[in-house]
Length: 392
Image: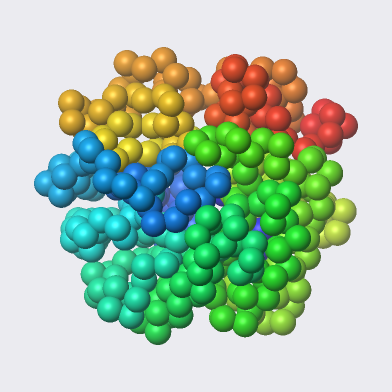
């Protein structure tokens, strides 16, 4: 996760994280990526069921009942373990998390245990009553997915009317006083929609947007040909930076992030080195704190059936099941070679990644994407768009 607004607009300084000792339990949410202990933010896919049919769904979600989902009691036992382990955030996702009737109960339980509970949703099921319930239980944040304006979004989401229902969900969250943000997955089909999403951000006064680079997992594995070329990716990141700076210059405090391609960090730094060398020095310090990709270390995932993964895109590789062993013991143990390697993956990356001067602030980028295209988890990430000259 690369904070474009934090880096390019100076909304965060290295001293901000240092003031809290860089401990995840003490850091505010907007500084959590700069923690030193990297206690894992845990994504719990609480269900595989979903009311939409998104073409890029990493969970292969469908609108049917799936067997073997963790029960409410098992979910609370997981939350007990995560809270004791020191996981600072529980991100409830799916499928569509709101199809589970006990989501409010589970989220409230996490809040009561001292965790920050957030949800990742398509937003279509958030009516006024649901929004008020989510507000009352102390939910920290609701991330709602939009992948373009109405025609593009509804084609991408596979259900007509999804766009308007998502907008209603955003309005209902804002009315209830819940912090809400947008989530957008970039691909050739919708990259031209990026400026329009910034317009939505401004017009609806939404405080946050995350732009996700495409990951080849789940149904997203069928979209490799729809991923941007390196040149198109650079142009998209340039556009995101430009629009972020334009919003900031208007005096609008919006948080803009890119996710799932940590080449964005060095790219932002190199741009600033030409435009604002003093700020570039501070940005480099922040990027070192961030450490790039943290799959298997600073982020983990629990599937609907209790399987533990390095992140939500690694569903084909499990490190164990919480029904047999608590997450904390699975995560801290050394029984799985891959999990052990991911915690120190800079030793294992190959090719241009191994010799890259940005390895310390990129962390080797997305291993699951490298594996998807090459079959080798330690091969260079094919989505890295930095030139050989830039990484030498």
